[in-house]
Length: 115
Image (cartoon, rainbow, N blue to C red; front, side):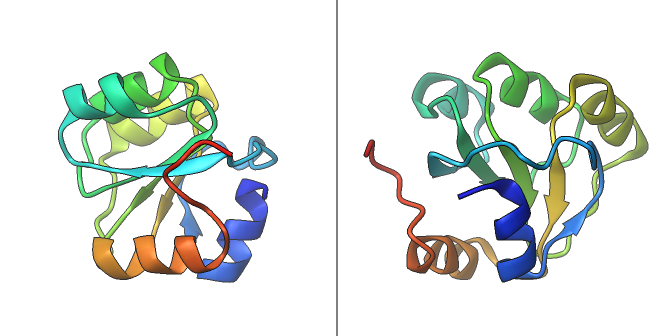
């Protein structure tokens, strides 16, 4: 599934890298601890977090993640958007809480295990 499909199916609002939405989503990872995401997320994962600072872009770039979804309607700060645009990392916003968003992703076939 591509990031664009997730945007449509989950009614996500795109905040950065609007030209890089064709990334393939190979799984998902939910965590607010950056070191946990660095250690455990996999290339192509979509990352669900409530963190909004620019360090999330560095983590997503390091692990070659498909994108970042911010939960609870949290908005990225301007530095985060600028860095994400520069690194071609899509940052999206959902009004759903983490638990519901992860469930919705799972129902769409996005899992946290390797396929």
